[in-house]
Image (tube, rainbow, N blue to C red; front, side, top):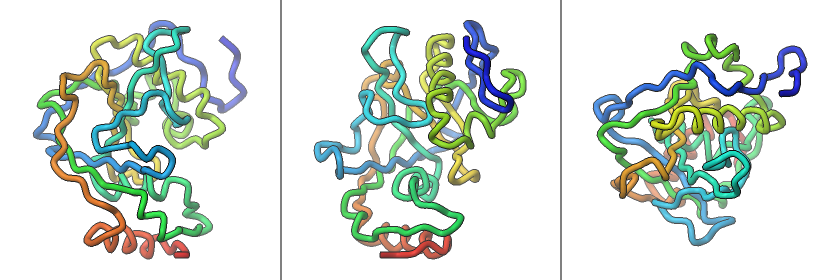
Length: 220
């Protein structure tokens, strides 16, 4: 492995001390997911990413060196976190950036339920010190570091063969929990869609715009 620069996230080893925890329905009864049809018009509420894009923890592969990706799906424990991690993901908070209101036509909020019991690798703060990494390095880093943060989700997937997701605290809304689900390790169906709402109509439009104004963002 290459030697990281001072303060840089190190690469994971072959046998990391990952914490695998069980998530039960009683902890979070409903989860939220936002999808966009702007770049992928065929996207629906149940659509998992099949290696599309470049995020903090995806894409990752089923096997190192193999081309087939793990199918992933992001969920948050609150609608606000889902908005922050999707609709407002690229909008600067400091200084306040600009939000294009018309873009809401592409976004949909999914309210969903997960399996009654789910095994996940915890990237929450209490379990990072034993890995020798910090939240700043793994969760709060900028996109330039995504090449290294994805190595950790890849290692978690490969080393924890019973894990069905990665759990962490939202970077954009630290009051909420997030999961990145692994479809290949979930039951069929992997999730239960409770409702789908357009972000361009009420009440979700008003809810999102209230958040935009609370954040002092500029509407265009």
